[in-house]
View 1: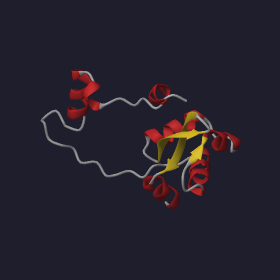
View 2: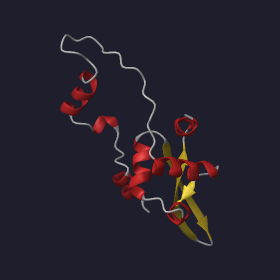
View 3: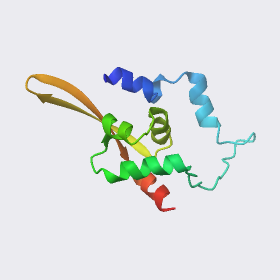
Length: 120
């Protein structure tokens, strides 16, 4: 899978590429109308059964799961994208060369936040 396609799937873009309106929304979204910062208690992510199972599968592998592994466990790309978006998993891309062939291997790994979510 090429890096450009991966960026499209996971909506990766540098913060400087945000339109001015979007940057302003990000900056002002945590403020009240009077300009005071609103305090919100941190929320524990609520895991559904499918999300919990996906995190358990990812937790079994130290280096992360490649597509054949997570597909064999019945996990879907949309589920994994949501876990990455929520910060419970991350993506690691490796470029491997063997016998004159070069390929990219994409692995999905559980994060520390994902492990905490499993414990809670």
